[in-house]
Length: 200
Image (cartoon, rainbow, N blue to C red; front, top):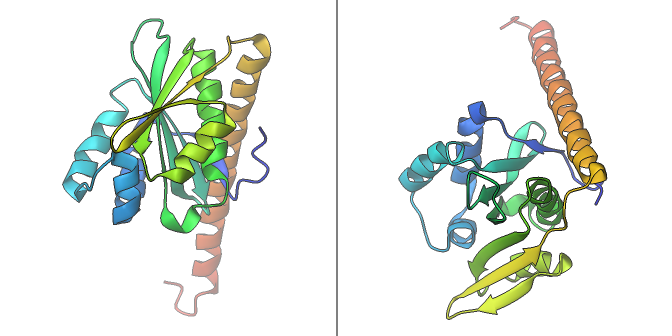
């Protein structure tokens, strides 16, 4: 699936970007937090959660719009050695929902899982989270319905040279996009300083 429709740059987050990830999660409104974590959570919970994500062996993809992280997908392998199963979780800020970001991030997450030998991907969401269920259906997920929760499972194909190349290409494009955006932002700041009447 192409990223052409994404209104920003989709790339992997680096371990040093914990603060960026935390700020994204803190911007989630009450309902979006409940959809992401299964219940209402505090700012303190999010702070502790974001700090341990990158220590857990997870892979996080994010969508940056105008240089700000607005959506993220987390992939958690169930084992550190040759995992065959994993869990995926997604968060999209309210103002950026219904733009196809969840589907694009799901595509990246499935590709990432595939290339790491993860064949079964689990996703849990509240029963009323129809948006997440619709995204999972696009990838032929099987659903298990419980009292207030839905668990989706989808199978990822075996990795191939083509799938490995796709991920490497996407990573390279993401890094290039991030560098371009950083240079553009720095240039805009410099220009605003030069054009400022006081130079401050």
